[in-house]
Length: 107
Image 1: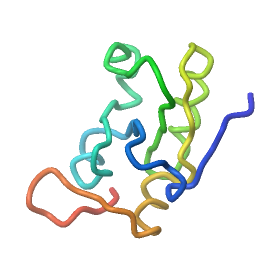
Image 2 (image 1 turned 180 degrees about the horizontal axis):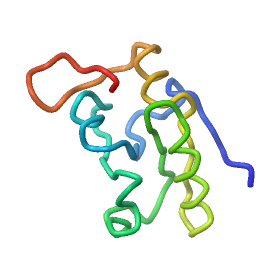
Image 3 (image 1 turned 180 degrees about the vertical axis):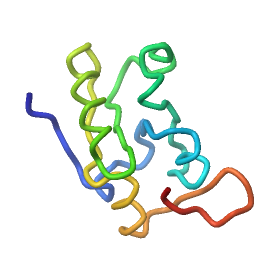
């Protein structure tokens, strides 16, 4: 199944960005305004996803987000993969924040 994919710099401002990385990865650094929904608990937390509009799915490098995007699209959501994940987000100089006082980084 072909999925829509965009570069981190192509994610619209105010988009519904869903970060599917695990807790430690999220804590280290994430995009401001992103929603954290680990891929490992996707099914049990599915009700936390917005039901309308495009969902931009991001992970560390793009592997997990492709799988989650495919699954979501197959289950009635409008999901778009963020190519290169948070690695590419960071390399593109886009804003990041961390939980805590440490400088944000990609784990």
